[in-house]
Length: 87
Image (cartoon, one colour):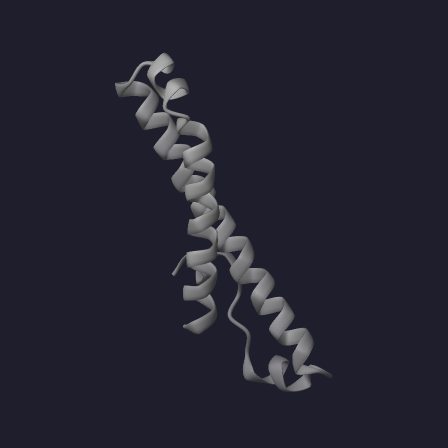
């Protein structure tokens, strides 16, 4: 749903006129990668912001919260890439 909001749906005529399907697949993978990175980074920013509201900064630094959030973002990017690729 997020992918269809950012990019125009391609008509079959445009897909058929592509010289190589490899270029079409590259463009689709780039679109999926961009949206998965965007969605997971928004998720991470909201996670960090809302956590700072309820917990002290010293506790978050002691627990390495930012590094855990970045690892979570990377795993979310890979998850959304796989979901977007197989759908």
